[in-house]
Structure formats: structure tokens, C-alpha cells
Length: 420
Image (cartoon, rainbow, N blue to C red; front, side, top):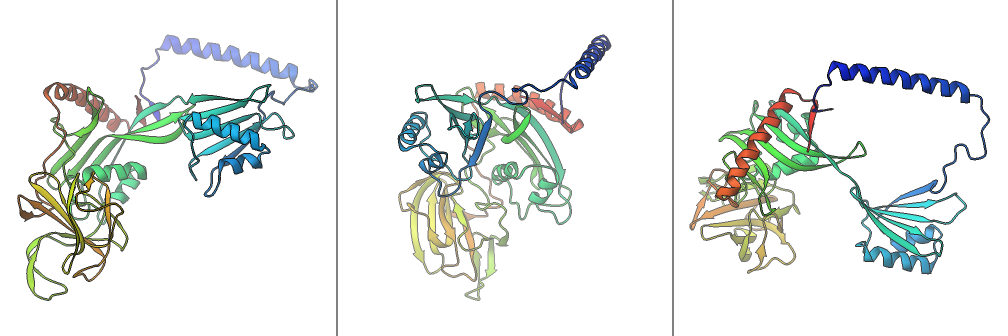
């Protein structure tokens, strides 16, 4: 992938070629002179930190246990633990944290320890001549690039398959799911021929890719029209997603609480009940979900009901504002700490799917109630939140134009990236 940059003019390019030719000649002469020179005692051996052991923390590992295996005594272990604690390292995380142990030679004791809790932060401990451990925190320089990927839904595709085929990383796809779930249902709104695109961050350190950052912009040709969302930081430092006009793109409720779940029964005024056998209204949408699937709250609010009845089984009802409530039914169990009066945030797990009440199999029954009346979760117009004020909106519109210009360029040059 190439960096977007200015072209070098012919005069400068000629000078560079001549300089390289001279440099290569000098290197060749040096190699001829030194090819058969005898090695001295110090050749090929680096001074100082030459032997390094890297340990990835595993389940059950403790700091004292890992330090003890490296030959450190009890007093040293206590001192190191105290120094790390004063620098924000209070525990180790399995499969995430790494520790480097450095010695001058294999026979020497450890003289340097590097704890790596993040790709972008290292805590280095060195042992001084008096045997005391000194600490230094190093922030790794981050090089962030904006990368553009686009694709199209093929016949029989899911959005996930199409996204992976387009080269979008799984973690970025999950973030896009969360964003678009406010506007569309990935089970029913996906059609062959729909185009989509994502602009997102890739983070590099010393020229190597480390991880991916934020989603910067999303576009999807949904059934209800093209959906566009842009990430924007306001003057107060808070971040949100906005449509092309600067209106809040994040709705107060999600249409589908469980991402990528298959709809097994839609909202309708007439449905033959699979258990009772007679026709009656189905006031919500059913999503297939194996028993134990976590159920997140579709929006922030306060729990007004939590209990059991013969129809819904275990259910939770959340009031989001003066107009909207949501209901989640047939749960196998409730999440810990979830009770009447509990305030929940959007995305917080409130329970787990099951088949309690009048149900023929594990699933989530999801309802949206607007002004006391049940509405179709997949089609109801949902209110946006976090709209921009006039000053921030003017700044956003300028930013969006520059972002669109970058997207247009990257769309025409798919192997390029933009340094942020």
C-alpha cells in the first residue's frame, strides 16, 4: 500500500541516483577490504542487553511466579511488584500482557524487565549498580493511516461474508454492525447488488502494523436509501457519528439488539400462534438465538419491569424516555444486577436468551412500544440523539467535505492510504 505524496521532480531524482551510485561503490570497496580480515574477540557480540526471554502471560500466571522462574528472590519480587503498582500495573491479563526479561548473557541475572500491557505503552524496569529497580514508562510512537475498503453484496451473501471478501478486518466489521444496526436489519435488509464502503484507521509502529483504530466513515446502500455515517469530534472533545447534514446518526434505540440474528417471526396484526394454535397479533419481532446468547439493551434507560409471566416467560421492560419503551422476552435468566429501577446503558447485557413461557425454541422476542402502542421495530422511525449545535455543525460540514474528498481519492487509488 502506498502513501499519498507529491511526485519528485526530474532534477532531484537524478541527484538521488548519482548519490546512491557513489554510496554503493564505497560499500563495495569496504567489503573487498574487510572480506578476509580476522575476527576480533568482540566481533558479532552486542554489549549490554543481549539475551532476551519473552513471556506471554497465560491463565493462572502470577507476577511473583513468573519472576521467581527467572531467578529473582523474594525481596526483589516484592520491590518489583511495588514499583509496577506505583506505575499503574496492578495485575496481569492472560493472553494480553507480555513480559520481557533481559540479561547480559545466559549466565547472568536479569538486569532489565519490560512489561508490555499495550502495543503503545511499555513499562521498563532496570536494576542499578546498588541493586535497586528503577522504572521508566515509554509511550510507543503511533503512525495512523486512513484506509478505504469497499464491496458489494453478492447473491446469497451475508454482510459479514461480503465484508471479509472486501478485506475489512473482523473487528472493524463488528463496529460497522453496531453502527448500522440503528438503521437496518442485517437479516431482512440485505440484497444482492448493494454497495458498501468503510474508511477506518490502521495503526503502525516502526513500520509494522499493530492494530486497527476507529471507523471514520461508513456508507451502505440500504433499502430505505443510502446510509452514511461520519465520526466527528466536537469542540468539547466528545465523539459521535453524524449523517451528511450533521444530524445525529446514532439513534436512541437499535432495531436489532442482537447483531446478525435471523428473524424467525415478524411484527404482524395476524399470526397463528405456534403454541396456542389460534390467530392473534404478534406485537414484536422474534430473533433466533441459542440458549444463553447475551441480550444487550437496545438503548439507555431504566428498567420498569422484570419478572415472569406465562406468555413472555422471563422478561425485562425498559423505559427509554417519555415516548419509547422496549421489551425482551423468553429469557433463560437475567443478568446479574438487573432489577426494577436499575439504570442501564445502551449495549449493556440485561439477560440471556432462552425458551421460557409460550415458546417452541430458544429465541429473543423484542418489542418497541411508542406512546403506549406497539410498533414494528424494523420500520418505526427512531429519534436521533446527540445532534450538533450550529457551531459544531458548521465545523462538521467542512470536515465532511475534506473526508469525502479523501474517500473519493482512495476509491480511485485503492492501494493508497492517507497519513493522519
